[in-house]
Every structure is written in C-alpha cells, then in structure tokens.
Length: 316
Ligand code: COA
Ligand code: ZN
Image (cartoon, rainbow, N blue to C red; front, side, top):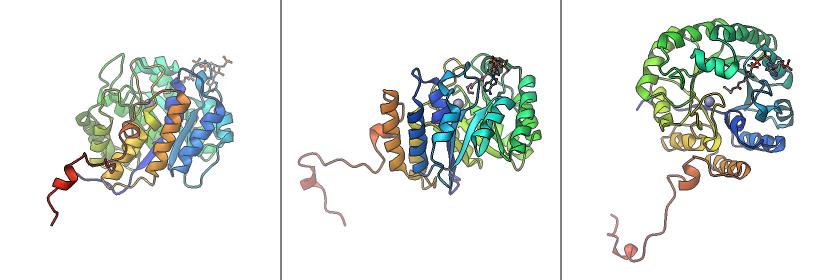
C-alpha cells in the first residue's frame, strides 16, 4: 500500500452525532465531550451547527457550546452552516473554520435545507463572503456525493459541477460526504481520479458513514490516491435527520486504531480517545457501534489456557 506518514482527522461526533440523538444532550455534556476530544490531541473538531433550531433542535445551544469549550492550541474548531445567517452566528461565536453544506442530489438538498442546489449555492456564495470577511477559511462539504437515498446514483458530472461552484467561491477544502454509506472504494477512486487533478490546491476530505461497512475500505483507498483528511465520529455516532437509513459515521477510535496499527501518525492519543468513547456511551445511554472499545487494541493479550505454557517449544 502507498500510505501517507500522517493523516488529519476531523472529529464530527458532537455535530453529526448529537444532531440526531433521540434525547437532547445537555449543553455541559456537549462541552465536556469537546474538551475531552481536545485533550486527546484531536487536530480538528466540528463542534456544532449553526442551523435553524426548528430544523435541528438538538443543536439549538450552538453558541453556548462554543462559548463553554476550552480551546486547545493545536486544535481547530469549526461548525457547520447552511447559509449566511449561520455564518454570521458562527463567526460571532469565534469558530476557526466554517464548514458549509449542500447536497449533490436535488432531492436530498430540498429535504435537508429546503432549497434547490442552485438556491443553496447562491446562499453559500453569500456564506463564503461572510466567512472570508471574518477571516475564516471555508471548507465545503457535499452531502450524497456518492449516492442519494431518494435518487440513487449521483452522476459524477453533477458532483463535479457542484465542486466547481464551491471552489469558485474560494473554498479552501472540499468534503465529499457519503451521507448514507452507499459508496464503494472503486467508486470513490473514480471520483477522486477525476476531481483531484481538475482542482489542484484543494484540500480533499472524505466524510464517511459506515451504514454498509464500507467506510474504512473507502478511506484506505482514498489514502492510496493521496487524500489525507478524514471526518470521523467518536464511538460511531452520527446520521442525517433528513436522509432515511442514515447511520453512524466511521468510528473515530476504530479509524485511529487502524491507522496507528499501520504506522500512520494522527497525533491523537488512542487510549484517551477510547476513554472518551466510553464516556460518550454513558452520556447517550447505550452501546455505540465502535469495535475497539469492545475488543481492545490489537496489542491486547490474554492469559494462556491451562497446560499450554508447559508444552510450548523453546524459542531459538
Ligand atoms: N440559524 C438560525 N436560524 C436560521 C438560520 C440559521 N442558520 N437560517 C434560517 N434561520 C431561521 C430564519 O431566521 C427563520 O426564522 P423565523 O421563522 O423565526 O423567521 C426560519 O429559520 C426560517 O428561515 P428560512 O430561510 O425560510 O429557512 P427554511 O425554513 O427554509 O430552512 C434552513 C432552511 C437551511 C435554515 C433549514 O432547513 C436548516 O437549518 N437546515 C439544517 C439541516 C441540517 O443541519 N442537516 C443536517 C446536517 S447535513
Ligand atoms: Zn455525515
């Protein structure tokens, strides 16, 4: 495999995850989770969203969360916004980066943000202006980049035209989001091979959901093609309230475990991350999909069964 020496993870659990928890997570617990994630050395955290509180009531405390967290030097704190109103709120709240959202599928975009793609892109042009005036880089995410739960296949040309507009607004990075876990590695490869050479200088992020157990395979193949930025969610929280069948993101500690085992540096303390995931499970009151919290790290060893030790051949 062609592996990079280092990748950058953006933790999105307190946004992508907490937005669809059935019970409202109290503000102080959201702050606690962000602070714990910061303490693991997490380089980027998408803390919350500045969206309509009617659309996503679970994140109506976005300002209070941003105001309450302890900012660790070395971590960049961002928030998701769908429009310029959200960007004004996010800049006022002191985010480092603005993450925007539009879908590559008309049906999902209408379901998610009540706009056609063209209407969204007009709003995002205004959003980018607000962000840039505030000195904040824009990272533009594209939902349903690899398939839509309503429309099925999303043509690559359609994805490409949305990327082109977002790059035109001065987006520093583009996030290709597999919102409902429909992408496979060959398809991710085809998209990246077309888009990466066409838009040089763009920082590419892959945002995966593990709905169909293809998240880590997709990430590994994107790494082969030179992508070094990935979103992930503590415990495997996550899902879109406006995409039926959506389930959790790739689990952060499982991904960091895989990368660490392969010798790829993330700058994240895996043990602290596992402890954080255990705490998040207590907060949400249920077991989460992550595997490493259950299995332990690959370095875990068990005592030998009775009678085996005596019969082991001597090692040279
Ligand atoms: N933050 C807070 N309030 C906002 C807002 C924002 N970013 N954008 C719009 N609003 C408010 C408006 O002020 C208005 O308030 P009012 O009813 O008190 O006058 C109300 O929301 C409706 O505004 P409108 O522009 O007509 O929006 P809409 O009802 O068509 O909804 C969105 C559009 C984009 C605001 C809404 O669909 C949304 O927030 N979606 C978020 C989806 C999401 O987060 N999905 C998951 C992540 S991908
Ligand atoms: Zn997502």
